[in-house]
Length: 260
Image (cartoon, rainbow, N blue to C red; front, top):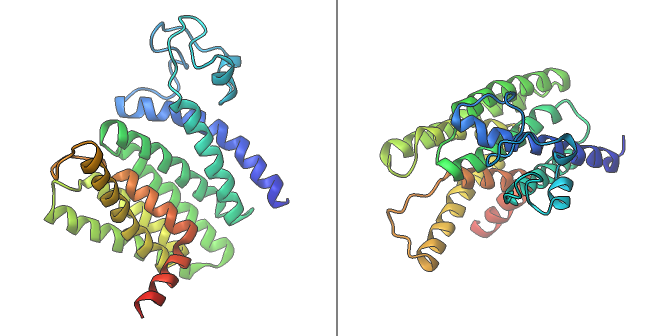
């Protein structure tokens, strides 16, 4: 299968998964069932028809409004679908058709859901984080066995311990800045980044704090936020990890060259 075909297929698959993630983002924090009831308008309660539930396209055709009550439908829904589609396509481009693709797609989907949920309620649900430990961990184990990448598996475990341990220590020293949800997320991120290499772990760790610091400064400059203003940190951890996956080796090499 060519890279173009793989990326196109993953883009379409990502649109479908993104549509499901919108359900996850809304229902998991509220403890609601993911299967029942079916998708419906939160204002009028009408069930969404299958032809009105096509990712992105239906939102555009309906002009962002419910067909029955004309209530506005947030643009966030198609944006999540598009973001998932692009992320899946890029993941396929970077990894190719490999057994590693399965746990990585799960990781990307979970990361997008956690990103949005943390913005909404400033929590990282165990239902997503801990299940991702299991799924991604087993996926990496199967990948290591299939491709004889045992060194990568050991490094993934070490990355999870190192990154999770660092975040745990920071949470103990500065409990107002980080919570245990961030620590659990750090274990997952360290596992994935560790599989690819120590440069990815280091860049992912520092990039999260750097992005969070930049955002905090912007809030202070333009929105009058104070030093004690609470902001969700999970999204910056996830963004930092994505930066590390895409450019970790390059950034680490550049920094080493500047430093030495």
